[in-house]
Amino acid sequence: MSFSMARRFGYTDLVIEHFRNPRNIGEMEDADVTAKVGSVACGDLIKLYVKIDDDTKKIEDISFESYGCAANIATSSMMTELVKGKTIEEARRVTYKTIAEALGGLPKVKVHCSVLSRQSLDAAFMKWEARKGLREVDERFVRRILRGVLDPIEGVDIISAKMVEGIRVADGKIEIQLSLEEGTELAKDIEEDIKDAFEGIPLALDVQHRKGTSTG
Amino acid sequence: MLHVEGGLVGGMIYLDNAETTRVDPEVVEVMRLYMLEKYGVPIGEFGSTMEEESSEVLEGAREVIARRINAGPGEIVFTSGGTESNALAIKGVAHSKRHEGTKVVASKIEHLSVLDTLRGLGQGGFDTLLLDVDGEGFVDLEGVRRSVDGARLVSVQHANQEIGTLQDLKAIGEVCEEKDVLFHCDAVQSFTKEPIDVEKMGIHLLSVSSHLIHGPKGVGALFVRKGVHPEPLLLGDDREFGLRAGTPNIPGIAGFAKAVDLVNAETVERMRGLRDQAIDLLLEIEDSKLNGPRGERRLCNNVNVTFRYVEGEAVLMHADLEGLVINTGSACYSERLEVSHVIRAIGGTHEEAHGSIRLSPSKWTTGGEIVSASEILDRVVEKLRKVSPLARARRVST
Image 1 (cartoon, rainbow over the protein chains, first blue to last red):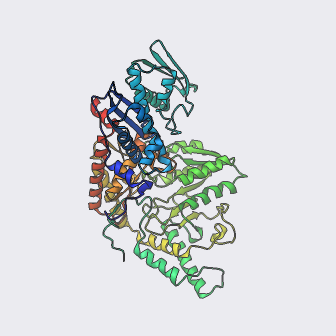
Image 2 (cartoon, rainbow over the protein chains, first blue to last red):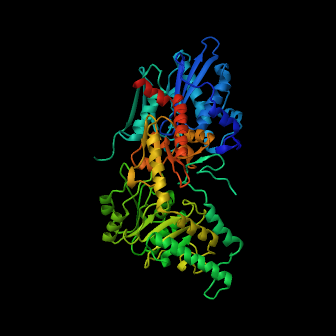
Image 3 (tube, rainbow over the protein chains, first blue to last red):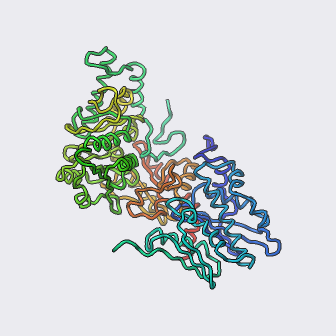
């Protein structure tokens, strides 16, 4: 085409290239661990699939699925490229800034996409470690997984949005108390997202909302 | 001379005419005259030849606009566009009537220039109320009747900017008359494309704009019924009946009037055909849904379809890279990162709003372009669904 692709929609050529031809895309049936972060309501969702070697803790394979904008797809694509073949420890040093810089930068309003793709990696590692008995499923663990669940109104994670009032892990059960009113669309959406985020963790999950305050 | 073939300019298929349009070359010719030769501005009653030429075109343009809506030329105030017209109508009336009451009402699906103006009034101590709409975007008349008691102004648009819903202005006007409330209508999207009669419809103020009908950007007008006195936003002289100070944009106004003259029943009928063709083709794509009504109650050049399991900015971006310009209600595409308030107001989920795509043809759009656009969208949606976890979840469950 005759027009320049540079900086279209405020994106760099590299963002557009990864958006058009995303690397490591699609479902992985034999993944060791999956992580789902973001939400449909935000228009920003990533599902990550990772294969990790038990001994070397190396990322043998990684792929993702995306429901989101061009930046969501491009940052996830770049993130998977950056961590593939690395050990968990090495991969953890890849920050959201590293991902954005590797793409030649992101528009300011799209930096959160880079944060979310990094969050998907963090959630996958934590879940893998929990399943291998290398990490205890405690309140801190739950809190970090919840960082991947977003408040669609503010567009920030539900911990930052102060929606989580209490977390309790006891007797093989995770209890999460939210500040949302029971039965509302928002409460239902977020409960669904939390369930997705904890998928694969072998503990019962109980999400509680505030009882309705409205009369009728 | 610019090479034009159908709506194709520079190799792009442009279907974003509800956002802005390409200026008609005939309009440009008129504007050139008033920029390069007859560049005077009206000053007073006894002006120079140049002043008189500009005065003539200004008053002529007033008549052209007025005739289209069955108003008098003395009721047309030129502004810098739809946003200013809406502000002058709403803020202007609210402030001038403040001593009588502070209630101002609008529908939930108004343009943001209306909703933000209302928000500003709310912060300034006014009592603002937003009316619900039904699943197709129509304002509930009983709701209007119940809620406008004591209001000074009701603002309901003619055609919706995203989903093309055409409100029943006559019915709303009747309720306003019965309740003795002023009725403002934002007709920016529909002006010249759908019939408007401010007399029969009981409208007191009506906003129109030039750049959506192949006229220049930065020009609009507000119809202000005789006897209605909004407080002006801009001061400094007595131009535009004391309602809008500042040197009038003569070339813009001349171009606006020319653009109005160029819209006729035939161009409107053409757009209607293209609209229905596009709707039929796009709904053939699996898991798609039309937003807004069909047929006569829909603006002649609006198409809005939600493709499930995909996000609109990604659709838009792929389409753009393939040479198709469209628009979306997705939050990811908006400066404020806010999802379409219109799709949410008609009961759409966040997903339906993020996946909503608007196509708006013009008089230059061809049937071939509509076919190409739907083929591009079919490909793009399929490509994105292949990588969408939502689409896979659906495949698994069915």
